[in-house]
Length: 242
Image 1 (cartoon, one colour):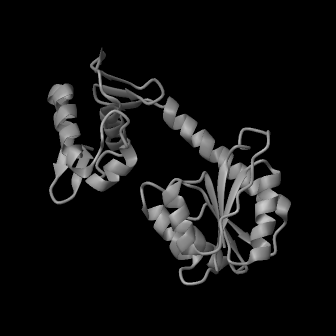
Image 2 (cartoon, one colour):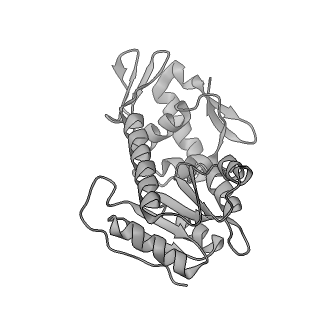
Image 3 (cartoon, helix red, strand yellow):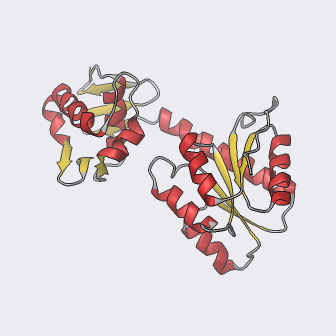
C-alpha cells in the first residue's frame, strides 16, 4: 500500500504536526487517518513495520500511531528500535492493540511507548491523546531551548545559541555549538561518532564520522583548559566529563 497523505488545515498549535500511522488493517488505518486529518494533522499511513522504519528514516514524524500486531516485525519491536536510536527516541509513540490486559500494556510501555490505546477505541479519545502528547513534546522542546546548561564555569544557552566561559563569550560555529550542547546535556554518557553525526548534522560543515574528530579538536582548543572535559572514549567515541 502506498503512503496516504492528507493536507493540513488551519487549527491550533499542533495542527501542522506530521503523524505516521502504522496498521495492516486497511479499514482501521483509514479511520485513524481520517480522525487525525480532521484535526488538521498531516498524516502518512503505512501497513508494515518495515515501511514504517523506512518512512521515519526519510523524514522523522512528530508522532507515531503504531499497531501492536503487524506482519513480520511487530509493533513492540518497531517501538523498541525507535526508542533505542538517539535520532528517533524522542518521537512520541501511541500503541494501538486489541490486547487489553494490564500485562500487555506494561510490555508496550516497557518498550518505550508513550501511550497505549486498546481496540476498539473512540476516535475522539485517540485525537485527544495525540493532542496531549504533541503538546507535551512541544513543551519539553521549549523547555530545552530555554534551559541554560551550566557546568562549572561553562554556560550554554540553546535558545540564544550562546556559550560563555567564566562570563566570557566563546565564538563557536553551528556544528561546534551543537556538538558541545549534545555532549553536555548528558554528562558521563559515551556516544559513538555515528550518534554524534546523527544528532549534530552541522549546517556549516559537512559532518562525517571522520570529521567529528576535527570538530572535537577545534572545540577543545576554543575552550582552553575546559576542553579537557570533552573526553575520548577508546573504541566508542566521546563523552562530557560528569
